[in-house]
Image 1: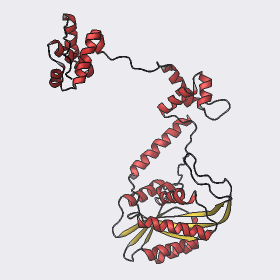
Image 2: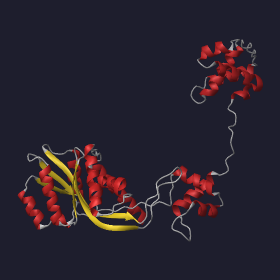
Image 3: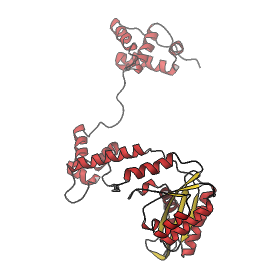
Image 4: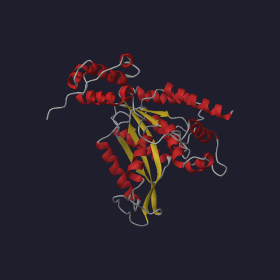
Length: 361
């Protein structure tokens, strides 16, 4: 069925002048400019198909704006009011919500909830919730932080980070730490499996079956892990783990070990062992700066993926599960890539200290 002939368009002098002015506004109102060109072309006698070819638009667009102009004249080319409920929360109310959230607390709590703040300001709970989401406010959350008081903090950061970013040749860099007192726990009732709409459920209480301590060395270059499990956590076990590392690293490579300042790492027995094995070089992280040791990131994965929701009826079962997880990891190791320079870390800490000092005054 052929399309009907497009209705002719005639313009008054004032309409043509206004359309020509709108058609030249290519930066601030590109949509209005295109609609004006469509109507001007229609007034020149072009059909919808010809207008579409000339302006590079769809025929339906040419037909739509011709019809809108014929029905409503110039008013038909401007944007129609968008559907939806008019805004009910003013800018002043938004500012009041943000100010109250950041600068005040309720009389009976340490932080506001959406409902308590809504009642205080005379708004709806959903309005407060929308404002908080828009501005990224989460009063119910609180992060923890701790600044190291190590007098050699800067030197140790530069030493460890320099080792990460520019490891020495013919050497292995190992991030070493202990995850002590891992508990073998069993629930007092079987875990109920996950079902559609219902997560897996476990009893809150549990039975303890003993503890184990894991010593781990993460290879910076390959991501592989050397692990050793012991019943106790003493300097004797640490020295045994150093011997395990010594057996697993080729004899012609130096060994650079990143570790913390635990007392078990500095006993006379450990120092004598290190003096007899001169290829070992220790690099201590600053006090209260375990985040600088990459093996902590690996411990986090072990905890969340294996230990946190696991059940073990004995220490032997726990140890077997951890060894299996290490073997699985080493089949497809994923090295962690350190990207921050020492200067970037120190600048970030300096800015944080400035914020803390400012908040005290």
